[in-house]
Image 1 (cartoon, rainbow, N blue to C red):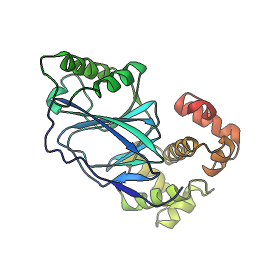
Image 2: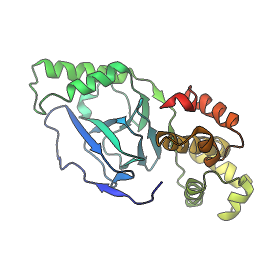
Image 3: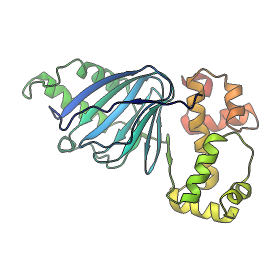
Image 4: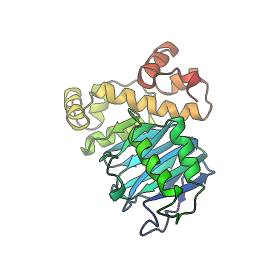
Length: 259
C-alpha cells in the first residue's frame, strides 16, 4: 500500500441545521484522510464500499462495509480510507441522543434496515420539516441505531510513549516474527514489563493486542482483493489454517467470504 496520503477537507459547519444531518462522500483515492478534528455533534459513519479507519487518542477503529463507526461530540479524531470508499455519515446533535447511549467511540454492526434508512434519509433536504415525515424517519433511525450491537473491530491504544513506539513498529512490520522480549528491547523494556504495561493500559494482553492488530491489518489487505494465503503471510501467521481460525474467531466468518 502506498504511504502517500491525500487530505480531505472537513465540512465548514458550525452548527447542524436539523437534529440529524446526512452527509454523503466518495473518496476516490487510496489513503485519503482528514486532519485531526472534532465536532460539536456526534458522527456515525459507514462505507458502502471500502474500509474506514478512525483514529482517536483512545484507539484505532476499523469498519468494513457491514460495520459503522461512532465518534461522540468533542472527541478528536482522524478518518482514513484504506482504498477508494463511498462513505455515508450522520451528524447527530447530542440533545437528540436520549436513547442512544454511546458515550465512547465504538464500532457497531450495521443491519440491512439501518442501511436502507440511512440511504433514504440521505435523500431528504438538509432543512427538513420538523413536523413532517422526515423528522419522524429521523427518530426511527435513531431508535434503529440504538439497537445495533457493538463489534470488536477496534484496537485500544496505550498512552505510554514506549508502547506507542511498539505500535508504530508493528504497524509497519506486521508480519515480522519477533517475540515480546525482542520487541521490548527495542524500546528499553523487558518482555515482562511490556506484558504488564499493555494489560494495564489497553485491557488486553500483549498477545491479544498484537493478534487484533494483525487481524485489523488483514481486513485492509482483503478489501484490496489480496489472496487469502498472501494476507496470512503478510500478517505474520505461520499457516493459512491458523489465520482462518483466528479470523473466524474474531469476526465470525472466514476471510474468503468476508468481502
